[in-house]
Image (cartoon, rainbow, N blue to C red):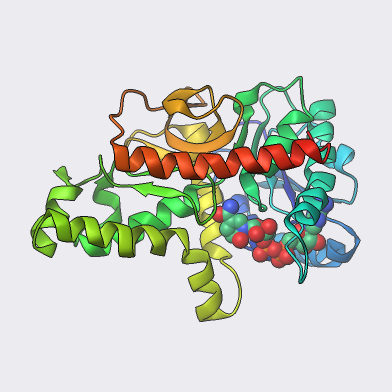
Length: 335
Ligand code: NAX
């Protein structure tokens, strides 16, 4: 058997944590040959919940689960970590200004970056799930100067999967037959789900949409008026329907993100927010979502895609928001 891999999960006593732990322990993330050690990091009010989850993990008797440990100290929790799933974050409370929100999260992700820098394993891979995810990843990375930039990511796979789900219905295909979809930009309402290069069972999605909807103009209207806003605002739709935010789908997307990062993307590209190298005009250093392939355990931006004026405008708007967030955390002294 392989050596156990250590995974540190922050906010492990929360909702997404609860949905994540059992799937990781079952082997869904790192495969059926890799034993896992789970380090659960919580703050005081979440510790009992994490303890309860740990008891249930024991009761599940997962053969791959080598060890579970609970921490309230980041330095100890990230010591030796191969993966950091940064789920715990400070949600926006009533009357909270954006500055307050960024400051509160800077107080979480800054010290966690420092702890990762201090003691994580050499192959550490980080994904920020807690919102504002892109900027939280940026803050963590800024506090971990010894860790390569490409190890810091933020989750846009849920947005990607949401887009797949919507598109599958629209073109009457199975999600597994759709390729070439991209989420660009921020994990926020400004994100741009881009279908320009999407195919369904090998057939271009734009053509298939036009055929089904009665022409290219109708397809464009559907994209701008229905598809893009629905994907971008799906989180709010879930809250409206079920009364609380996305949990199992967020955990599932996190599993997908890490699984593909480690195991590769043989079926073509997916979406992840990674530290920009300047590709597609996204300013260097911003954590922004791109079309990405996983090659030898690293995310690579898919290069050479033609981006038309419409897409360029949408990407620019989301990137402007990311720059704005970066400026705000800079001026708050959080970088
Ligand atoms: P919960 O409130 O259920 O859980 C969060 C947990 O984090 C709590 O148990 C809390 O005690 C813990 N926590 C807070 N500060 C911490 C710290 N400094 N160290 C360790 N643990 C800490 O929220 P949940 O529904 O699990 O959502 C978690 C985060 O995911 C939220 O920020 C949410 O906005 C974000 N989401 C991100 C998504 C994405 O696609 N990137 C989608 C789903 C979700 O909205």
